[in-house]
Image (cartoon, rainbow over all chains, first blue to last red; front, side):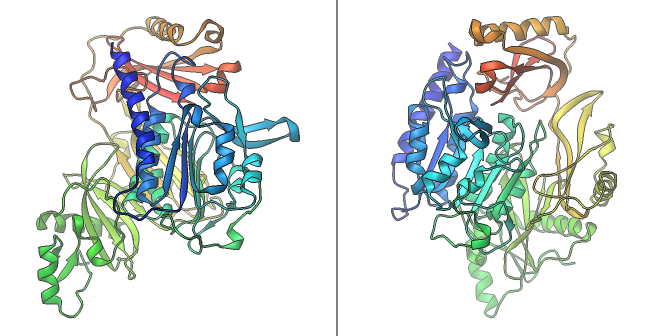
Length: 254
Length: 313
């Protein structure tokens, strides 16, 4: 009974998120800055496992609220709407991208090497990896303003994912408008949620992306979460015309 | 130093009246924003997530400013050009805190300190931390530097954490020194004190987290029963083909805040209190590991009732 009620509530939350993403933001002009917020829910609910993990939907809600408060026109995708194909089709238009899923430095057989990436949802229990080199190819050198990768391993030293979004692994105080956030090694859901609650909350209160990172890093973590960032510390994170710092970027990198 | 120093420009009298009318507190000829006052002084505005009220009472504002000034002084930090105060609800703890933001001459935030209702320092952080290099001091020196910082701000780690700190480099640069809280010999993951240092050992941030404790159970169940409870959950959750790919790795006592990760009911009475729990760590292999990196299952140490846990994706 309880399980059914809760499953229904989480399903309702997902449905409301999808509806909310389609509605215009009151009081703002129709934004032209596209964002995608993708979350893998299927891997953590029946039938893939016998429980329903409450974190993915909650973190998606945080991201949606955060991105919309920054002025992005945000599309939420989960289940069959978050697939390898949909990510690669949308990414060229994304000024911002959020993902919560599995992440790692995966073996890419066609290239006989490893690339960082993350798994799609696809609405089933067999979930393909979306590799950084595939994102890089789809984006064709265009850099992304704000990228938040809520997965394991995608901020590890040597990660290839920031470059796929055109963001070089450098830290600068000012001068451009881009920011990549990710986690090192393995990361538990409770810790990621604690970080992201603080991060999006700080951005919503007008803190810079760097300050929001600092505030997120100071949360109480049960497992010693470690995060890293690359980009421009003092940027607001707000949707708007890109400010390019050529040496900060890694256009076309994988 | 004076608690607040944002001098009023010409026409100060009129400005004072307007600002007070719009919810900004004026103290001793200086200007302090509280709650909704950020826009009026040209500060960034936003959804103000966490803001709980428009105005702090003047005595509370003054007290928070004085506390922040004392922290800055004790840490040897330069006095900021001005400060603002806001009442905020901390999303993690649910506490209502006084948040003091230090501003530079251009009005940009350079530091944030948070205080609880008793005036205790909850956290303080210097903003603008940008580093490309790794630590330049040794771990032992970082531990000593963190100890010295705690002493300066009046936090005594030994009172809650008899164990020594863990010291490690942060990916974003500098050091993280962490004292995990212990109750008796049982750890409280997430509770304790963290100090962040820049690569050379200077102050970057400090935070203190401490939840309340529920009463100890009259008796505790044994690890055999805990393994059985965890195994039963795994049997239910995983199909036969995947069950063999999940292994109970460790069973250990910890104080945890119950959560609804797995849909377990959260205790209606004092849900944010720490409960003594058996925490079962489950590792995965094979195809299961592709979709589930691991699990932690928590069970009430007295009753065996599930208390939630965590998911490693």
